Amino acid sequence: MKVPGPDHPITIEPATGPVRVLFGGKVVAASSHALVLREASYPAVYYIPRTDIDMPLFQRSDHASHCPYKGDASYFSIEVGDRTAADAAWSYEEPYPAMSAIAGHLAFYPDRVDRIETPG
Image 1 (cartoon, rainbow, N blue to C red):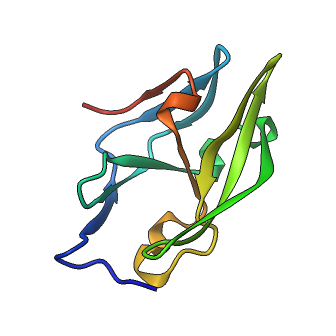
Image 2: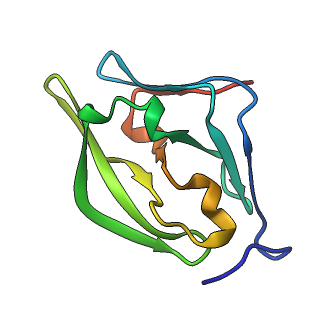
Image 3: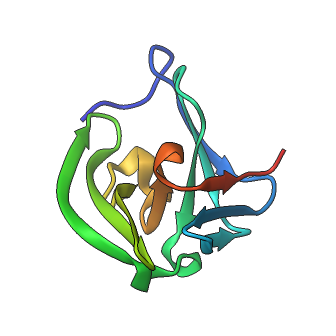
């Protein structure tokens, strides 16, 4: 486990406005309680609480990954109508203590959904 610091900064803050994720002509996630995670030089990632996600459209996949700063990630595919986006979202269900704020949230790959609408 690595802890964020000056050599690899990570910040988590509330998003400054609503975040929506669209796929297959449907809003699959919409939240005024999203978090924005900024990690080193990577693009910002929005984490949306599961309570603001249409979870029946999501199926857990067998894919998993590990981040030395955040922990183990599980992945979800989205099915809307006849469209499927494989491994389009991920979640750190038991993140490391420094990242505990993102527990219970999902993040989305922008290139696997139709659109992610963010504030700003």
